[in-house]
Amino acid sequence: MQTVPASIVILMSGRGTNMEAIVRACAAEAWPARVAAVISNRPDAAGLAFAQAQGIATDVVDHRQWSSREAFDAELAARIDLHAPAVVALAGFMRVLTPGFVRRYAGRLINIHPSLLPAFAGLGTHRRALDTGVKWHGATVHLVTADVDHGPIVAQAAVPVQDHDTEETLAARVLEQEHHIYPAAVRALLEGRLQVDGSWVRTLPAGCVQSGRSAP
Ligand code: GAR
Image 1 (cartoon, rainbow, N blue to C red):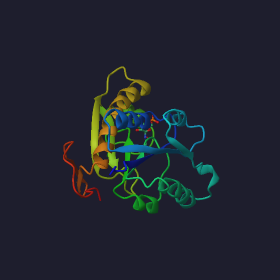
Image 2: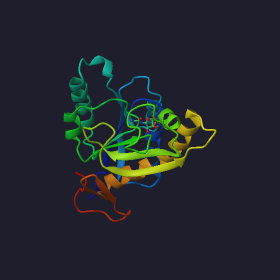
Image 3: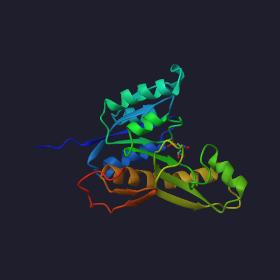
């Protein structure tokens, strides 16, 4: 009997390089899963073209067509649920999600943020890192809770801030790391290798598959 691969749904708003990294890793490492759909809240998101070229279903739920966050999130959830995903990965999805939406996908919803959380939650992280004068900056993958840009930390990557850095050079150095840590974290969540204890997350090594899901 053939097992049906688990589905991943990726939400994004723009260029989609993290989505691309997940799609590529899923294929290259033969994950027991497939990226079933890429959904954007922006019809002009550049990343949609890559997904379509890979034969992945794409969908757009344009937030401007909904009068409230609740209505937008309800429609988004309906489109996501068509794919019965084991994991919903936010990859540059620039919308604040309602607590109800977050609850619906609790333990399946993961995000990447371009800073070393809890530093620089919110927007403009690279500019703020430079303005603050930190010597290390980076990216964080975390499980999503109703508290925006918080939630149990799954993985982080740090990069040095250099004297001559601009917002662009620093962003590029961080993004390169994002493309490593995010696919690895999505895979670990998918394979049930995340053990969550309050705000502490332990990632079991690859091949160490749990019998049940351990994310909350
Ligand atoms: C990435 O740097 C990601 O960490 C960030 O948006 C960028 C999307 O780039 N996400 C956030 O700021 C979420 N708070 P991409 O579209 O090329 O993946």
